[in-house]
Length: 416
Image 1: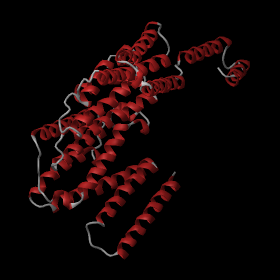
Image 2 (image 1 turned 60 degrees about the vertical axis):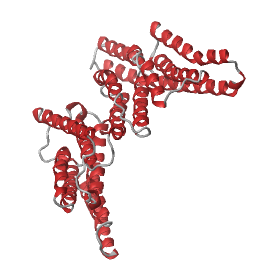
Image 3 (image 1 turned 180 degrees about the horizontal axis):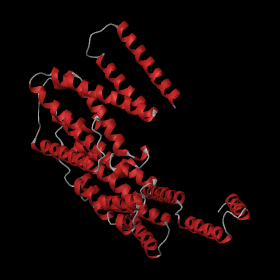
Image 4 (image 1 turned 180 degrees about the vertical axis):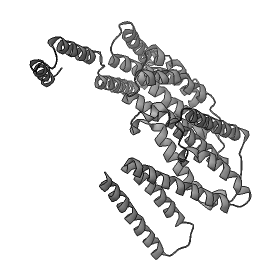
């Protein structure tokens, strides 16, 4: 307890607002709470220290690697693994603090990868990068639940994404094992939500999980069909509606990665689809996998919408929540004329921009207001590329948009 707060309590006791017993109970409570809180900064430096020590050892060994015999190389190869296991065992059985746990888990995670790589190099064991990453992750996965390590959880998500990208983007295969790799960490993710719902570490997971899924989705699809737009719109619709669940609505906006990624992704996808060239080739559905994934994502997003409706959290006039369904309907109009889906996409974008402006004005939120104005500005600017109009008219339009920004923000400022 700080001396200032102690003086304040002494003043309250002197004024007979609280009793001495109440003062002692409050001071004891805060002292206990302060002792129970882990030193997060020390834990961060512990993880960074483990990374730096590991990198330093690798550089020292690499400098003298060619001078070692095969037996010596093998000993060096297993040394990071042994040291990491000893550190983890010490942290686990001695019930050390969070900094020890995170530091030892990080060191062992990279020690596993270093040992696998060195042994493969020493004995010329052939294999692909994806198989190395997969083996590495499977060996390190128990750290997430054994030590309850947050760093291991982050590293698992990161390397699962790298694995999916390596298999799908660079080897033209489908990384089906990415799905169980992500499902494996969901219990730990949900536990973080339960025990530390407002913690910054949990908020970071709300960004990393949807970002990993978004990056990895392209590894599952063929990438040469217009149904991909529907697929990504369904994914962004799923994220956006997850961000409207009761738990996420109680969080600060910067911790709601689902809502922000879903909203920005929906707008960007629609801006791309607002050009006519996207629809010129007609509806192409790609392979069966594309159709199954698209159907699963649409069904999942609809399921979340139904849940929001039952919880009375569904906004009837929010086009962001229904954009994926509306776009799925727009997709089938390209069989008649490419102009129809292009016009409907522009109308959908315009309605979303107007809704954001209305919502920002209603809530007195400058960020939402300017977000809506930015959507409409982007829509108008993009139309300059496929509509033949003079530079004078374009200049007048941009001046009008600039004036609109100023008037809208100034009006809200006066209102506040």
